[in-house]
Length: 84
Image (cartoon, rainbow, N blue to C red; front, side, top):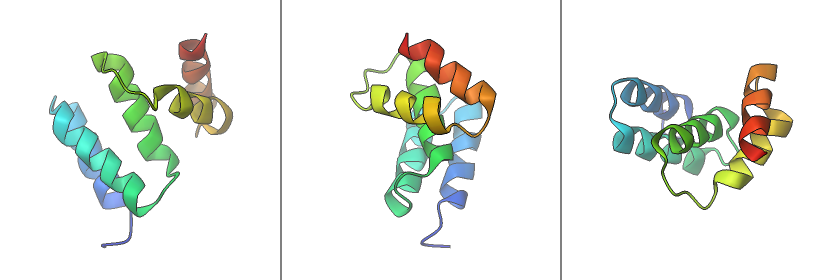
């Protein structure tokens, strides 16, 4: 599925849960490359940046997107709390 973000997202989630943050970051980013604005990948990238303390210049933008468009109220609340 070369033009679909789901396989990349799923691999990113798997690597993230296995503690392989660099690999997860690569896969979430790859998902966004094939589908710009793909909310699940943005959520994964933002959560990874927050939980690992990575300096990510796009984090504020990601959090803003999640705060407004997050898949669930829980995601929106999580993002709003990080923006405060």
